[in-house]
Length: 351
Image 1 (cartoon, rainbow, N blue to C red):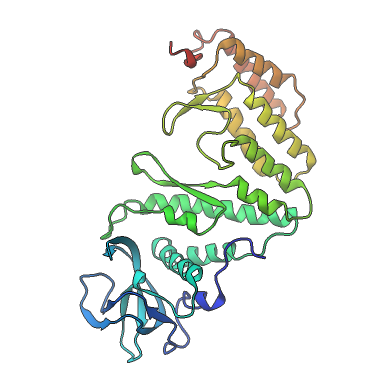
Image 2 (image 1 turned 180 degrees about the vertical axis):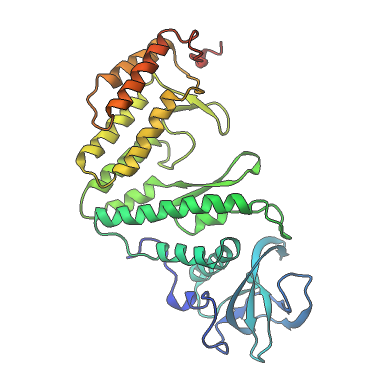
């Protein structure tokens, strides 16, 4: 069993940089196309390639990603360096070829790998490949290692996507929803007005992974995530303790009890063992930030907010240290006179 969809070794050998046997025919043309001297539709045509033409993948992937209509469908793909049976070398559009012996799913994953290499570089593509083809973890410790590598990949991709969204090319607006096809662990969402993409963790998917491990620390951690995003178990900009006000903005829902419930879930996982303390600490900081951020506004009334803050302070949760409790006590004092302290509360009334 594999952690995620696997790609056969014969497919990924075609993706490696450089081919030890350049005469090996490992691709076939699936849409009639042209062999070009350089990447791009404006480059000189070297040869017409009919349907079924055998080609060798030389491993080169262009940085150029072209928007091309094929049979009324828009593709955004790179160009691949290949060699014909007559030993003519050139470039073909990636959407027009597939590995010769690949099934539908293998061919799709092969193309996604090429696409990632074009946008983010071969090193990132290989790193993602190694992660997605890892064996399903059989212990909670192995699960933690897989999760952390995935989170590290996600953070790196966020930075790379931010650079690439407006990259100069002959593409239309860049589409990165395909990243979600490369792993069910992530769900891709586009930010408002097209300003970037985000990869959000699918806690439902990683819960299925955690069920197959020995040990329960991963299960406790996943339960915190599912409680935080109860609607569909998918991470988002709106955890359960906030109230959405617009597409990407919210105010705190302090006073409804969600902050306390989330802290109790974190504390239960915290007490179970230290394996996921770093991840649980990040979740705790997100909750505290929602309460303590000086620019935060609040949906509920003063009385409800005070009751929940008192309940948090009176609950002996180990994940809250002395500094946390001092900050919460100071914030509670500010809610005694919210207007004087510049706190915007009771937004639910519209007043």
